[in-house]
Amino acid sequence: MTGLRTMLRELDVFAGELPDFDPAAAPDDPAELFTRWLLGAVEAGVPEPHAMTVSTADAAGRPSARVLILKNVEPGPDGGWQFAAHGASGKGHDLAERPYAALTFYWQPLARQIRVRGPVEPAGAAHSAADFLARGEGARAEALLGRQSTPLSDLATRDAALAGARARLAREPDLVPPEWTLYTVRAREAEFWQGDRDRNHTRLRYRRAVDGGWARELLWP
Image 1 (cartoon, one colour):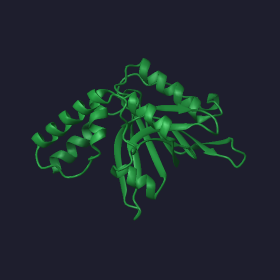
Image 2 (cartoon, one colour):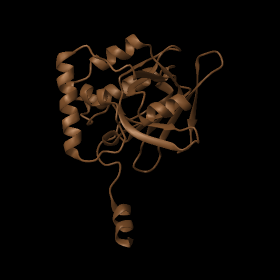
Image 3 (cartoon, rainbow, N blue to C red):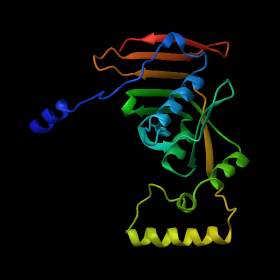
């Protein structure tokens, strides 16, 4: 364990060319700044820049986190950050009990991190169905099972169930499980973090104001 502790301390961080971030030039809406940073991550070749950690809590307040894919983000008071999940999954149960979530993006090559928190609203059946039908065949087959996070006896059982789900989708290509839900995080806070080798990190936080706009403030590293 001592060797592991030493090795972890010696690992390099914030290597390579890092981008600049001028908070004074940031737009009024955090969704606009997020989009700029996301497109910059895509241009820089960051792997899977649309992957994010989604954190929820159950009725007892016990947290849970997993990595999901961002489906869309829109500015304005009616916009937000979107992801999808099966309503019978662990995250689906969490959101039914506590409709609030935190999103975390980390783009390591750029030393950039974004944190978003806010209440979560489920979309209507039509929008949720459109999201499901836009998924790949394998993703739709897995979601159709509705067994995520439940105990599995062996991998052969999994493979047989997935084969059956694929066959069913081939017969019913427009099939959508009613539990499939597109969720929108209506941000109340959004923080943009730009790392620095000398630990002069730059942090800008947006907070939703009473009038529906956004208040901005710098944070200590």
